[in-house]
Image (cartoon, rainbow, N blue to C red; front, side):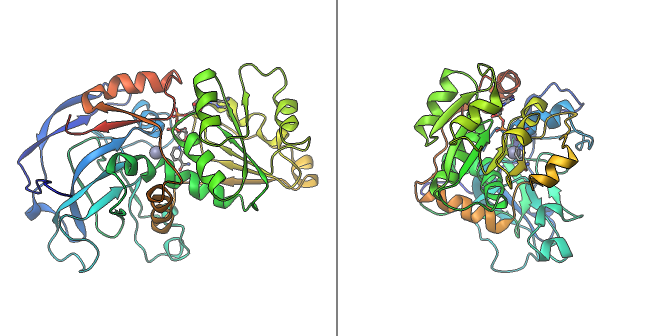
Length: 359
Ligand code: 8ID
Ligand code: ZN
């Protein structure tokens, strides 16, 4: 943290949209000052933010739930605490701490869902870049009890994408309840979530099959640990090609982390009996069609997995700090965000884009 200026200026750069569909505009805006923070809130000087496809869905109004308007998107932040609200409980954070800001900005921590560890389904959950302003700004108001303490040896540009892509796929993989040596298929494997999912799965001894398209994504997937790559655009018979690379029976689980509705279409077909479909990708107007007879007779499991809790985030960051998981990313300045959205919508981004909030 050497030489980081922890003072709080009056104004900052933000990327904001004020109607569904955009445009996203980069402009100067006020910084919330310490005296205006509520108890429990912290101000984070944000250094990097990953760009998740979720932010694009939010801006386009792809989902049945609308975001706040106007909205500053972003939920993969990494930076330093620069102010803490008066009467915030002691011991959670202090000025200068490196912290991550995830999608789940806050939850009540006292309801049944929170007590069981399902913090993301708390009815009082606040979501960065959706129901509260997010990380496409230089100074973010977040919540002391939910920011992620970052390992001091994890560089902030590597930490940022872990705060959504990393924690989400780590939780999703755990939800499938597999054993080392079993096959897991990652759909959307060359994207931000997918290429990290390959690495978390490999790190716990799973055998990974990557599903995506194009030579660049294939190269990345194989480089980060997939045993085989199936190209969903080239394949004449997806079901057969996936079964073939898993010794005939299909994977024990499929994490669907693609942003298209089509990616859900055949997922139940290519699973092994007893297999788990873990739904992660959130395309517009998508449905999982499950034949009841075969779901029962093949004992298939269909699991929805939504980000992760505080412990999942700490675990996910720990894998990254130990070098077991490393995001492949390109750094861009904040004012490039509209172009990044354009590329994301075309499926033209391999790995992640990380925005340098100060470039
Ligand atoms: O908590 C959650 N469930 C959660 C958290 C974070 C993100 C869900 N998400 C959702 C996002 O909202 C988005 O819908 O996961 C999805 C993927 O996010 P991302 O990784 O940030 O998106 P990306 O980098 O654009 O990667 C998507 C990949 O999917 C591939 C694309 O080629 C791209 O590499 N893909 C597509 I589009 N269709 C495919 C298909 N039919 C496919 N891969 C395989 N089969
Ligand atoms: Zn995300």
